[in-house]
Length: 148
Image (cartoon, rainbow, N blue to C red; front, side):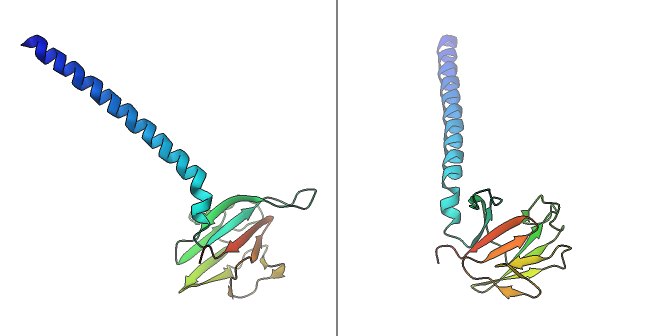
């Protein structure tokens, strides 16, 4: 009887170990899929694309994609901002993007170095259009309406 209980306990322990290993592998697989598909999922939502600094050939590429999911999104150096940009030329709370209905608006929050929208100084709240370039400090963000 003791041998039977001992044998059952061994099999139960082996099953528990295999389930544990399976769950770990499943979690890793899910994380990898999310990392690989993150940009494609974000492309369906309204988002900002953080562009790499201008290279010697003048070309920029996408460094990061930030989906805009909140009605109010702060961008700046502060940790309480939705998008934190570690650039000394960016203010703690540099700009705010507001979602009103299906429209998005950008507003400079009296930042020290100002904000450019498509190369022009942003001095009031302005509606964002697909492809608009918002420049803060040395950083360019390109707005996309996503897959609407």
